[in-house]
Each structure stands twice: as structure tokens, then as C-alpha cells.
Length: 348
Image (cartoon, rainbow, N blue to C red):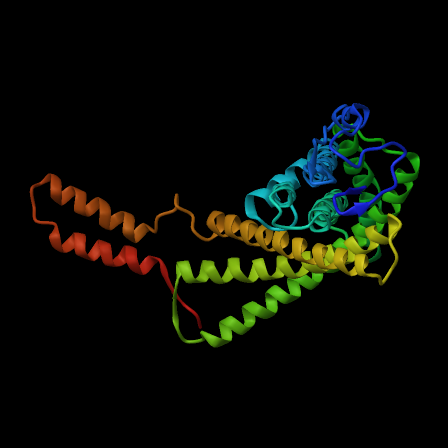
């Protein structure tokens, strides 16, 4: 007989429409029933492809669900960030790939790759976020201690060796995963490296920001720049510095973590990890650097609670004339001009 176009030699007679009931009952008693039908003398399992597709898609769904269930605090936040921004391989993209496979729009292999890409991204995310936090905390600790040279590197090494395993351990516990002694030892070592890298890349970022600011200042020399333009230059150059240091830091540490977790240096996965780490580090570093400079500029360069004495005197004088019923239109115009000029500076 033939089943879906493939010839078989049966152990019992099923070649005609009077096939034994046992053959039909066998197919109908399975978990996903395959309904047998006849096309002339051919015995056809009409819904077999659909049953196989359903089983494969369910397996992909189970893999995605299992991965999401193991995510700790870092993994959940990172996945949420990817789903919100559309950057990287988030769980939403993996879910959509499975749905496309169910509709026949893509192959099972393509859907499987989407799920695996999400899984790898989440595994790398925990290390990446822990690396970035370790670098930032190490730099902040050195700045707070006011040490330089060898002492700064020693302090950064110690801080990194403590911070990274602490972050990784907390994330593992929050996701119900095991955090072994072997993992702890690895994270102590890479955390120490991250501390030193944080100091080094922070210096590179400052150099990049300073260089960009010098170029802009030279290009606008002699021009009148408003307070808003000056603020934009400061935020932009700081964001560039943060993006530079963050990208370099993220690329290096992601490559180290890939090898630490069993990957091979120089293979396709290694370069993918470095690329993803650089991209994520550049984005986060740029956002952080720009935001911090913006907050600092608003606090120090645009103090809303400090009004120049000349403006305050003009304002009081104008209010006094108004109370006496005098015409203050000229004073109001002058005051408006002074307020406008107060927010303008010249780049000399």
C-alpha cells in the first residue's frame, strides 16, 4: 500500500476500503488523532502534515516559555527593554516567529533560529548588565576614594571582584536558577577584569568627549550661542563619550564572557557576542552619559532660583509703577529684552 505517496508493505491487509478496523483504530487512538481516508485504493493520512506542524510549534512554544520562566530580575528587565524598543531579539519577536511558522509563512528551522537567538541573547544579557554595573560602580568607587595610578586600579579590581558575583547571584536566585561555586569563581575573575576595564574605557570616553567639544567650539568660534545651544553641545559631547566608552567596554566584556561560558575565541558566536555587546554598550552608555550631563547642566548652569540682581531690580521697579497706576509698557519691553539676553552667551 501507499501512505501519503510512500509505498509500504503491510503486516496485515489494508490495501482496500475494507481494511481491518484495527488499522483505523490505531490511528484514531493516538494523542493527536490522524484521520485515515481512502483515495481509490490508496490509504491516505490526510491531516498528518498538520499534526506534525502542531507538534513542532508546541515544542517551540515550550522552549520559549521555559526560557522566559528562568529569567531573573535582569533578564526580565532586559527582555522588557527589547520588547519595548524593538532592539535585539526579544521574546515578542520569538513569539511572532512561531506564529509565522504555524501559518506556513516561514520554515520550522527559521522559527527555531529565532527562539535560539532569543535564548542566547538572554544568556548574554545577564552577564552584560552585570559587567556594565560592575564597571560603573568600580569607576564611581575610585572617583569617591580620590585615588589615582596603581591604587585606583587595585581598588577597581577589588570592587569588580565583589560586585559582579553579587549581581549574578541575586539574579540567579530571583529566577530560581542554581548559582554554583564554579560560576562564582568565574565571575570573581571576570569582575576583577571589568573593574580595570571600567577605568580604562572611562578615560577613552572622556578623551572622545573632550575632542568632540573642541572641534565644535572651534567651528563656532566668534558666533553667539544661546544657553540652549551650549547645553545641547555639552549633552551631545557627553553622550558621545559615554557611547564610546560603553561600546568598547560592552564589546570586550561580552567577548570575555562568551569564552568564559565555553565559547571558542574567534568563531562566529564570539564575533556575534562582541557585536551585540558593543551595540548595547554604546546605546546604554550614550543615554547614561547624555542624561547625567543634562541633569548636571540644569543644576549648575541654569539655576532657576538665582535671578540676576539687575533683573530683580527692574521687576520690582515695574511692579511699583503699576501699583501707582503709571504706564509701564516701556519698562516691560526693556525687562523682556534683558531676560532674553540673560540666556545668551558668546563663544569666544
